[in-house]
Image (tube, rainbow, N blue to C red):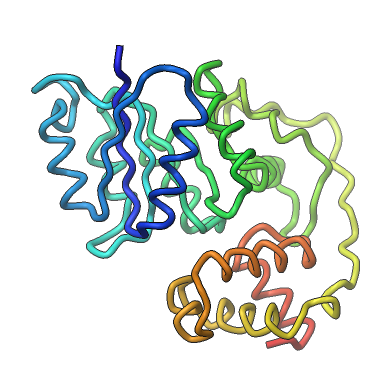
Length: 252
């Protein structure tokens, strides 16, 4: 039986990359439909069951939804399809709270960062077969920190697979018997290269990935690589945290 997949992603390169991830993740035969904007995605959904998946034929079983789109935000589609019987996974570059939690509240069944390695994304998507939510490691850590009320800027040692059997709700996450021991962040900001510092400066000013790529005259996936390196060196998981730390260190 053919499994239908909808990929909503405005960047052609990223869309092709996600198609490869899907094909590598599942052994079942599948048909992938691509959409570059919300309007196109809505048209495809209308032909495959409508908002509830009850009309038409052959509803989608899996949807990968980008957030920042030319004609709106993917969260709008998630809210519209809250009753649609598909596994809906956000695929984005944003790991900050302003994107993460609204997406989960609107019905996202998973949250993956496109900057993760191909192998990591494949491994996370395969969790769907086991009934587990696909979560990028950085997102799993962010959720644990949020529900355990770890102060901003601190990191705890956790198992990223912890949320696999608990879901996203705060009520489903057990309260720890003792407060996690925070790890001191080392002063590693001086290790940023000039290029990384330039990217961080633009991030701190609110520019999007595409805008940074245009300003610096490089490809968007090269910007992704710089951001990933910045996050690792600063030990952060979102642009907001990176911007705050950079400001404290006088980098921007």
